[in-house]
Length: 174
Image 1 (cartoon, rainbow, N blue to C red):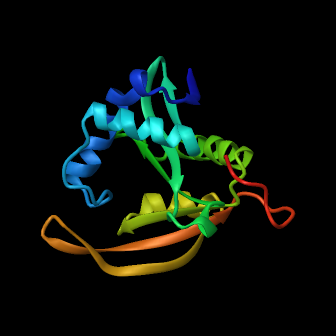
Image 2 (spheres, rainbow, N blue to C red; image 1 turned 90 degrees about the horizontal axis):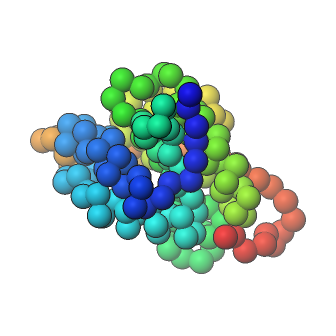
């Protein structure tokens, strides 16, 4: 049985770090060059929980994926927008886990007052583009040859999705 729950830094950092490491080492999906340690991942989880959200997907008691939101940009006028990401362990693409994590994440971010989610996808990445499109993200542009990894340049496509609308000015998020 699968469940989605809020991540706990001390409980989930090791599993999240293990899920993320192959994306860092073996792909250009992440532009990081060295996988974060479990301690670094715990700090990331704690920071996301304070202001946005970090959720994990458990399958039979084991963390097999996660999704989180964080600041889109540091300037105050962007505070109602957030950047989101989702990661699943190898072999779990197209199983519904990414969609379930994102849907739960969007609900949590909306509860916290966020209006817009932004996602970046290193290209080519048909699975990620397909997931984001299916969840209502609309393309907003592509940074060409923006990241150098694995001995070549990579493009990053950006997309956005409305989380909520309402009265303006909006209430402060968080």
